[in-house]
Image: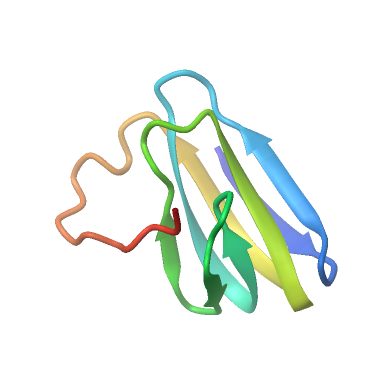
Length: 87
């Protein structure tokens, strides 16, 4: 599943994950807080969401954010680089 999401400034977004699915986001432009208590992350970064969540939450920054959200069952199992996750 691929979602191209554009968010207005300071808006919120939540996407429910099916059981066993994982997700990551590539920030195209702007910045936002990724995860329940996430740090502010800007464009051209990748965020890999925690494996034990049932949804992803994003809050747009003061200028909004656009990102590609990828949800899949096995897409992250072969990653060799650890990406810091907001917790």
